[in-house]
Image (cartoon, rainbow, N blue to C red; front, side):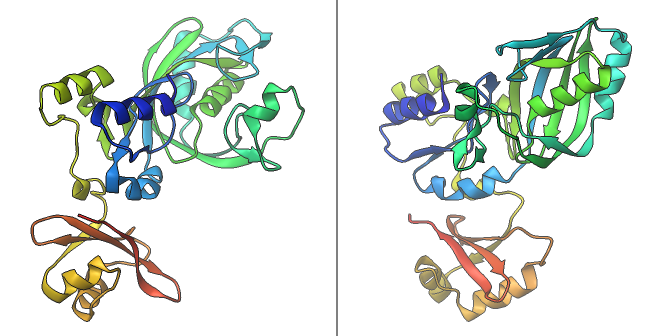
Length: 287
């Protein structure tokens, strides 16, 4: 089931047209996928920036064109390091690395997605980018495999981490399983399956995984308004009183932005600081 299929099914279950998501899952992946309903689709760009966590299993001794076990085999090699050494090497791959973006990815080269070019058998140079991996924990190892949990920054590919592990062991490696467990600030343990969602709706219950819009950006500071400030912010304008609060509240270079809430806690707007412009309203939310 693709990410598009999930969105389409949720639209049918909830009877909503406006349903979006915060980034597609790897075709091989299972686990957490964040869906946004109605006005919540406006926070997508800010959630996409957040870090994610995965549990990955890598098969050593195998190199493929897709960097996973579903691809065409390019090379096989015997694994000459011990299971303990595999685990130790996995723990070394933490920090920032300049790595090649996998050929089978949605990144565009010459205006076209790389996976389309790769599927046609075209030869092209893949771009490099800085990828960050941290909090690596080895969950298990064997003679030719390792399972680990990994946190990573936006735009970091777990396949690239696996490829680097294969280079370190000298035997090559391919991803054999992937499960997303965290898409900050959301956790897999608090999620629902599509079947559970459909059952809750059928019973007339509020889905337990539904998160209030005002809670979706917990790393942003918040300011509460009423009266004229509330009326103005609903129209995308910042009152003098609110601006004074923002000057005190917002720390340039530290804070992402400020959530503007009503006294009752309803999310009204998102405000950021733009160089040369001062405070600007980035999003306004309709009730």
